[in-house]
Image 1 (spheres, rainbow, N blue to C red):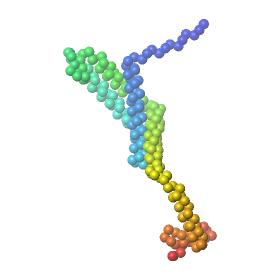
Image 2 (image 1 turned 180 degrees about the vertical axis):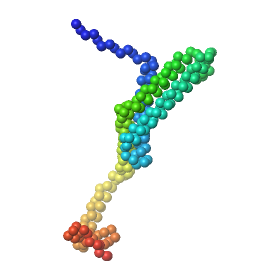
Image 3 (image 1 turned 90 degrees about the vertical axis):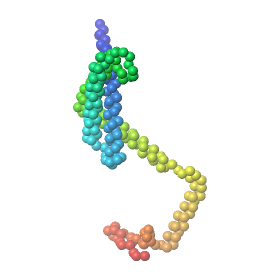
Image 4 (image 1 turned 45 degrees about the vertical axis):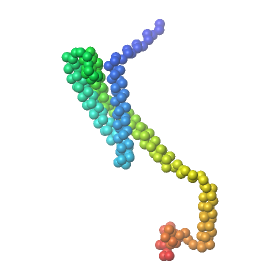
Amino acid sequence: MTDDPAPRRADPSPLERAVDEGFLIVRASLVVSAANQVIRRALQEHLPFDEEAATRAVREEAARLVDEQLEGMRRLRTVRRRTHRSYGQSQHQFDYRVEDVDALRMREATHKQLARLLARAARDDDFVAEVVAAARARAWDDVGSTVVDRIGWAAAAAPGYDEGRDERIGGLVADLGRLAEDRAAVGGAPAEPDGRTREAPDADGVEGPAAAG
């Protein structure tokens, strides 16, 4: 006797799909917002990554997005109630009529469910930690790419650099050789930039005062 197959999950309703897709968008928005905060602290304020600050920023942004969803829900509810008394042909895309009531109710419910789901997620330490980790990785990728681009630009050779390169190197070698010969003939101690000579370190390894030129 074979076991009964596991029951399949019913296809999500249009409302469930809308909420799931909306939550993915909201989560991506949280990651981008937190990454921007990390970059701003690093580049403008010259501060290292602070997990507590990033966590606080994620929760604050989540609270703002919850308020935004609730405001959208209230606005659509007002529009829907007014639309119940609107008949005839609409004049523009925001001129809702009775036949639009179901779609407005769907959008209203989506905002409500998203606000509830996001508020619960913002209280979930694991969810917030995942957003912070994703934001940190995104910030590093963005800043790292910028640094690499700048280094690549700064390290680029000037036009015509290779022309006469061998002659320049040969001249440098000759100059160094002459300098070595002059130093050997003089037999003096290494000179300071102002022309004074340095005394050798004493027994304690501390240099003596430079002799006046």
